Image (cartoon, rainbow, N blue to C red):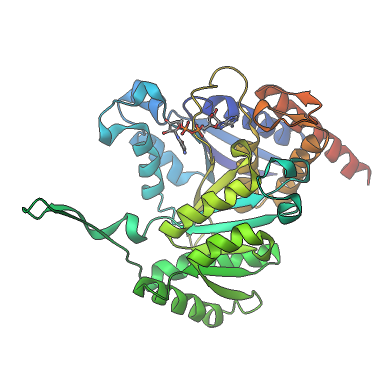
Length: 377
Ligand SMILES: NC(=O)c1ccc[n+]([C@@H]2O[C@H](COP(=O)([O-])OP(=O)(O)OC[C@H]3O[C@@H](n4cnc5c(N)ncnc54)[C@H](O)[C@@H]3O)[C@@H](O)[C@H]2O)c1
């Protein structure tokens, strides 16, 4: 029997609603698979500001450091729009990412057959799409020094940000990309602007060196300028498997890739930190890409699938439960294939419109069927 420690941070708005559906799946796994979970739940974001005056507490951070995986719902909402900048809900999320040193952000862009019409691109361009963007999350121009705005005193101001990367920052995210590509039986495309930026030149050189020095040559490595990648993602996205890139380009390219799938309520993400050499375990945080959706909070309308798919990533990448991860992803496909939809992904052919809880139940019933058919086989 395997046992795991999970920290759940439901957060604000629809966060607690979608996280509730993950709770049900955890219960199902404990009942039907050889696994148990210790789940600790803590407030984060606005809920934590209300309870403790800060968006995340030191106690929660300590729990997250020790956990096998951390699941987050979403933070923020109009109630906290005017709180002091340093304790705004998003500051809790940024502190979590920083203190857990989550340097690799994984954003899959998968087009489910049943949702191919939700993309704004033609079905033939996106059908079967399954790509993964690995974005460097803790370095680059968002954090580089010097930065700031200075008054030049002659009616002019000057704003500076610094794009900076070191060998070790590039190589550690490069390793994550190669290892994931290897697991997927895929390839890596590394994106930068080596034609106009020194940081891009170093990025390309270090990725090339890593590829041979650390024996990743079974995984194909190509390089592409980030602006070309932006075009290629729209022209023929299926040419890509894993894309690895820096913080700024990754921010933009991962949002662009997400929209190839056309549905915010379906997009999972993972952020990974360094591997502990003693245990082989990485710090990790799993969360849907969407926010707290205050416009639909408390109405049972939220699509829980992005959060459920984020939990599938946790099963795969942090808990080594790849069979369970496959089962969960297959169950989501099954449910969509049966024409079951929440309001955000409904289309002309939608057969059944489900609430948040009904969608969670539908996934569990698909899991049960899959489990029974595997047992019978
Ligand atoms: N990681 C995070 O926690 C995160 C990310 C983005 C935004 N936010 C915060 O969330 C709040 C709202 O931001 P926003 O409106 O720009 O973005 P949002 O993602 O919350 O919502 C955008 C639109 O998509 C819809 N939507 C989002 N998720 C959905 C789901 N699972 N099911 C159905 N519909 C869904 C919403 O109803 C809304 O119409 C803000 O306070 C913002 O700061 C938090």
